[in-house]
Length: 503
Image 1 (tube, rainbow, N blue to C red):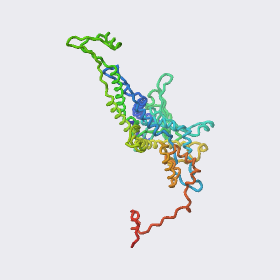
Image 2: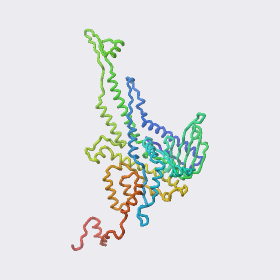
Image 3: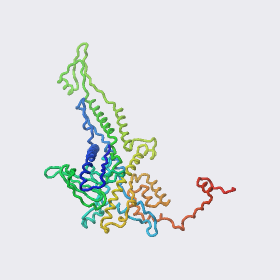
Image 4: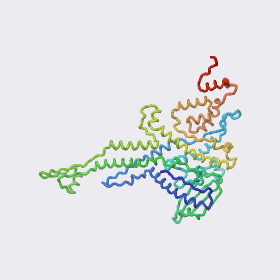
């Protein structure tokens, strides 16, 4: 299970060795592609139960799809990416006399750029690909040759897009860090003659390679390769794996989901077979015409002989629905537990908010989401490197100076979930942090009240002035300097009261 990572031992990519690298890479990519197609079809409802065959009473063969895979994917997407992913300022957060609470606004401007390019919609597609396919891909590329009108409408000098994982892959160096070496995207189409054509684009940090050929000629070692300079200086295709194994969020419970479908289909078969039960005739010969009259009129007259009484009865044996439901419920609970999805009907034996969160599985869901966040942030940082490289390469008059100065170390990625839960507790916590001297930018980001904490901070700079540091003259009196006596100081550090000699 999981998608295979594609690696190569080549350290440099040229027009000559690229076809050979691709030829080896497509072997693993085609395997990953088949698995991705299967998982996508599974979520859409095309599941193995639809191919079910029965050896006994083939006419009663119900095929019920209980699409828990779709349920799991939708929950994971909504819980983790229900609110837009935002960037907050991480460094350079000191108060100064000249510029109080108005630090570098580059992060806020970056958020505006992302909003202008509709990053939320791209993230939604990436989230679905991550949870279904186990991996997703984003493309970041600069806008070129824009007219003045387009520059006015499109504020950001870059564009974002989600690439189809069936036709995209990244080749990594075969080193411990698995450094990205080539980003590949291709499209398959038909020409006017009805032949399949492949158009492939491969990106390295220094070059952009293009290959166009019919059928699988793109993988031929003598394929014609066109090379151009990569102006961005970074690989614009970034992979977003869901986890290190690149496994879909429901992939490890596929056998259990198939068992649930089988159980539900058998239950429906049991109901239908009970209604369409066989009729058993004892010591009587019933013709086909008589049996048709029986089905039509609902009654039949039969005669027996002495010593051999005649009888007719329905052979009906119903399925124990209670035991079947217990079995199905057990399978469903195992699916929720393994996938980290809450069960809204469960309880921890108490009615407090915290007890319900633990008993219903919300605490486990939060833990799983934080693990996914960690993997997502690594790819997002790689994407930001491409964005900052593009911002530094465009005309300086089109990009704010704050954005030019922005560094990766200045940016932190913020996920917001349940921002209205425990509202009173969060607002009180925000006040306590501010009163304790925590920088307002950090305090606003920590409490989780706002989907865009950086913009909230920028909009609240003036009202947050009162939380700046007090002047040195207003500082509390200095603490008494500890004694130079080593024994006494060690006792104080150990929590032992200081005792004067001779006391």
